[in-house]
Amino acid sequence: MASYEFPFNERIRALLRLEDLFKKVLFHVNAEDQHNHHCALILLLQMLDLIERTDIKLDIMLELDKQIASMQNLLGNPNIATEILTKTLAETQASVAKLRAVSSKIGQSLRDNEWLMSIKKRTSIPGGACQFDLPSYHYWLNQTTEKRNQDFNLWLHQLLPMYESIKIILHILRASGIENRHQAKQGLYEKMLTGTKPMQLLQIEVLGNCYCFPEISANKYAINVHFYTIDFNDKSTHCDDDIDFKMRLCNLM
Image (cartoon, rainbow, N blue to C red; front, side, top):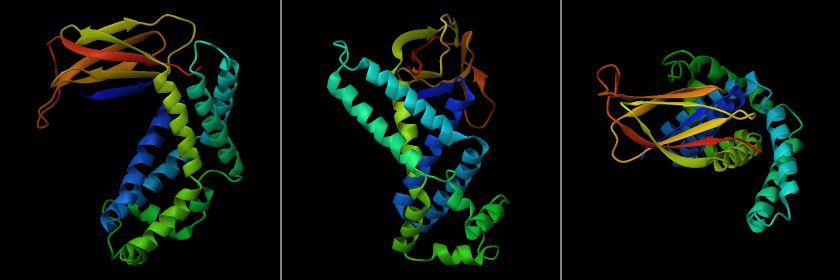
């Protein structure tokens, strides 16, 4: 079953993008092949652009502090699983402490690395990372796996506290929603939103062996989901069948 997420605001959109980049970077680093390490470094440099455009560190710390206060207020509530709440609270407190311990701007040590920035500049050009363009980079890619891993550990050291914090925020957010089954009549589903607190994340899980994918548009007032089919050699076409799916609306405390 395929699942899809749609963020309602720029802050959640940035967190989802960073989560995606971190997962891919770590996957390619662990694969250890030089081609995987090339992909990991390119994605890592892309991540710097995303971090630099927003005051992401402050946003994350403020959100973690907010979640800590909310969880502390829930301590002693008989309707809450105390063991799970206590564990999540401790993890969140530890995460925000690690993030506060990073005194400089997130990723600044990588931006100060002239060699990495020279690679970043060249890789913005299609095919710009060829060995004749970047002989020093070609030399690094042909170092031992252990040497490249040491460098990745150094480069990721300052970024990993941010990733741990992002995972906690998104875990709390995703767990906050209540799942309901719906059906898109002739491939179309619409829902008006009510309530004073705007939603932050929409999750859709398509049921069964479905050949369609959803395109989602949403704001604080309404949700529109259109299902489409595609043969990957032509443009998408609207699906006229009734599509069963699960939907979850999520919001942080």
